[in-house]
Image (cartoon, rainbow, N blue to C red; front, side):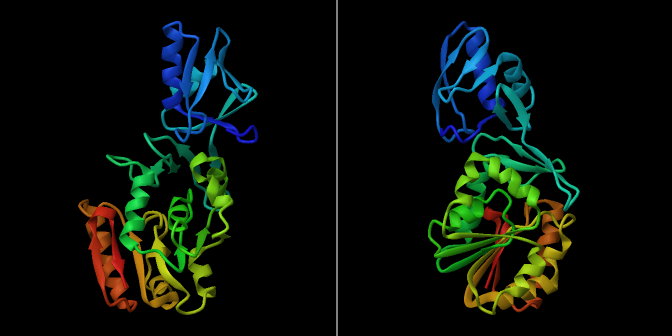
Length: 283
């Protein structure tokens, strides 16, 4: 871990360290970046000492361990939850740990699947549903940037749009999102996707991955007019993957039916359900 990168911890790191203290251990291993890497740490009466020089008092670790829905930055021995109020949307955004990559909590709602799957694997299914990702790819909702990061592994260029600057503030603190801000194949645009897409020329993208918030949070991103714009900017043989949500839930079934109907009305000739990725593929 670079000294320029803050220590990021959650209850998944704090609880085992507290257990090691209770056993009287003086050394342990833990992750300073939510599971991406591990380091050896020293334990003493004052707290846990990391190799980058940061020390975390036991009281702070107990607070982290007692807060399962938040990730924390730790600087100068003080733990601060990664949480931002958005002036743009009025939503409170926070980084929430999982057994794998963290997700975002937006007004208490998780932005990825976390039951039986972690957010990174959830994103891999979306990307796989739209594969192959070559040429120029559009990601309509950046969030933590996982879609853009995975798409950039094979695409020549990825353009990703985010309405909410608060989402990018959260991503900037998320260790799993670091490459979003350094990968030269990724271009980030801050703005309303419904407006930004109108600025792209026809046939500009070979693949579009549309992973919007829930229908009741972003209805315009499920509208016929928006789908018509996506059809216009998609190449003739291009593919659109549209994430919707659990197709077996009552709301998911209803939303899926409406999405399929409007995509067809917008000019998409082939719309197929992709239940393993909780969405539909259109072309």
